[in-house]
Length: 147
Image (cartoon, rainbow, N blue to C red; front, side, top):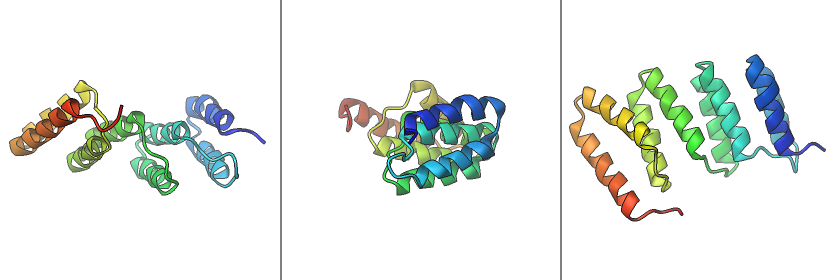
């Protein structure tokens, strides 16, 4: 039996570099059905990144949903990848929603991520939304939910 770490490295090295995302997804599906070899958060992040890099955000969201259904908590890399993809596709409402979800989980986003969202929201005339986000971010910085 090959462990999840080995499968993850295989996907990241062989498939990602060769842009063989469909094959990587097939391996990912096999992992998901192999008891004792379930994907880890790193595996999910690799798949999300691969699909986002190919502008296949709908597939990245499918992987995201599978991750959540399996009870695996998304990490900063998953959030960053999706939020940046939403920016590229001009899906500001989705970027904002996932950013909120990240804050709700107690994650402190990198300042550039917040700045990108802030600028985009201000360009859309959503100053009140930016102020609310800033208050939530400041509250999180003062009273973190996670260590």
